Length: 204
Picture (spheres, helix red, strand yellow):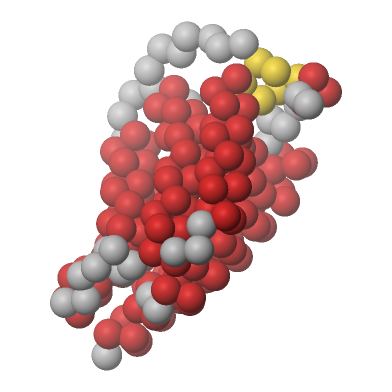
């Protein structure tokens, strides 16, 4: 029963990418390249980490969150603001790269999983910041679906009673991320203080 609920929540989470992709193609949603590039890498790393650490209850949701970001990450090359990333985005990419190196050298699966969680959180920051200032550039329907899937998955973990450093952190984070996005999408956009933009040609 627990495993089936996990698969259902994964399917719901994956379905959330359909309206997101459609919104991108219609040029209503502008994906933040830094976020989706980081999440693409993190998604596949999370799948490997969860599998090796024995986190079977959340494996299917992690798989959906690897396939989806990879698709959005590719689309961001054409529909995102790739040529004018802000310094904040560049900093997040650098921090994620350093953390990814740390993840690679550690031999402890649980520690690797927590490092990977930190990278994922870093990847979320550019989109959270963008949504704070420009909520109209994100798709509320998609994030509503993500919220349902993440809430179901987190509730599933709580019901299962399997509370440990492998199964709890990621579902809790995903629930909090989707909840934060839902709140940001329902508020008035804040006045944005311009940050310097870095042309990709100058990024070594």
